[in-house]
Image 1 (cartoon, helix red, strand yellow):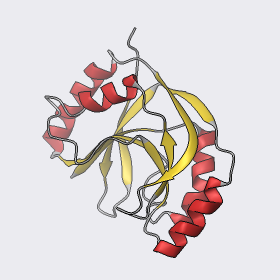
Image 2 (tube, helix red, strand yellow):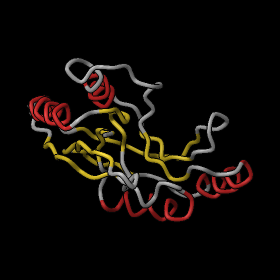
Image 3 (cartoon, helix red, strand yellow):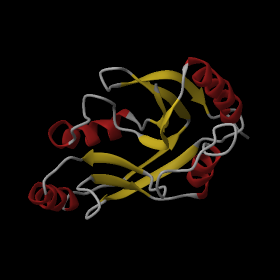
Length: 170
């Protein structure tokens, strides 16, 4: 089965993202707005339980972290995806790096760009139109993330929370 590690933003930020996602994100029904901390990977039931135990231990050493979003951006021309750009911070980078070290292992599939997807699966003209609309809006969110979540993917493609971890580091 596939698993991933994410952080969910506040309800206010999720509502803002969903106001676009419900119309423009082909994955809207599969997962709530989120920050991907570790991309999807493969695991069996035993491996998933081991990951859960290690994540519990790691989360107890991690501090809650602050995020700031001040604009929308795009992955174009690589893909016609539009997202809320999260300002990179050392704390966020450290969490991402930790989740690719042993025992989690592996290599990130691409450079870490912290974001919350607003739209994907768009044609070029849809992308340009929607990106222009979003870019004209006033985007300014700052909040503290105090939990991360281990998710697993169901057969229908949707994602479900396997376990939630409170960041308690001092």
